[in-house]
Image (cartoon, rainbow, N blue to C red; front, side, top):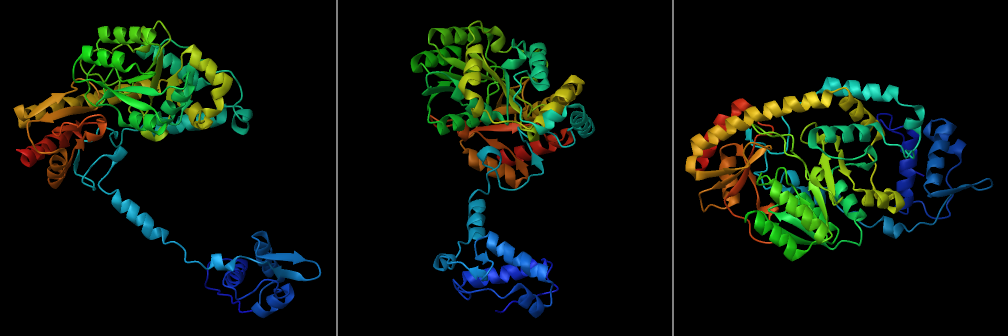
Length: 478
């Protein structure tokens, strides 16, 4: 049997022996029923120790190439070598083709120019350097050494609320007027998982999912994956048209972003909120309130959450830490009304994906020590500065060419341009000037999107780059 040792090969000697014999068996060079050389004989032939050969043979036995017996030594098993000799798929080429087909699509399928831009008016990334590494590192260390051994070595079966649930409930009560016990806060690994989990907990197997149009594409994707019939609740016709659409479609659940409508940035006024809550009771549906970006208000006070007005326990409040702390944390949460909480405890607990307990404990400590509140204040101040600069530059350089919505809140502007150019051309013209702006087509699902609407964000671009970036947009479009 031809086996050789390559001393220049970094692989251990036993692996070299194992690999060559395995290939010989797969290729039919060594056939079923054939005995392998004795341990001592092959060791002497190769000039290696007996134990080295034995380790190679044991690996072959573990993987089913050979069977060991006291009398016969190691005998080759019968394998379907014809199948093993079939040409293997060229997965590297296939993967490269998949990646190439997705080039030019960035975050959440966003149509982009396919490369980094010097002036990126992102609406989702946070500014580089804003993450509080030192405070977070301290929280991670403190959490590791302060929790019990059982917390780190056992499964979380205690029905008592975690410190993170306690901290989130207190934070929401203080900042959003949310009324809930810590036990009502359910932690999820991300917003999509949170929405999926909530939909699974709704009674009577909901079929009709009402959501704003234009609206949050991630919510649309989740609803469609769950096989729900998604119906549009138009936001561009005013409050009465929105409420009328709710009545006409009679959805089983409504997904709403009342504090900062995505992507237009409009605020749902108090009267509309009350009417929506009354409809939820009259038509017997739940409202899922996505309160992302509520912290980012500039020049106006915080708006109460929909949940804080809810007298009928019809609102599921959802939030996350992606816009205020870091999207890398992958922590979202939902505040469940009592009926849904009971369903969770009764038969839905296993449907809830778990989040790393160490990360939960660290975040709880981070919040308890006041670090999150201080960080949010810094982030709001930084975003306010960029908001003001971008708004001033857009008005100065684009003038009547751009109608700007969503001011005084959020992390982007919804900009409608006075042009017949389609979105893709607008985006590509900007890209040729080394500027990235973002399309809105995917936020529409029942009718064609306006071709002239773009998102121009200020979440991560440096303040000093904004005037030059907007100047390049003027050269690209005018």
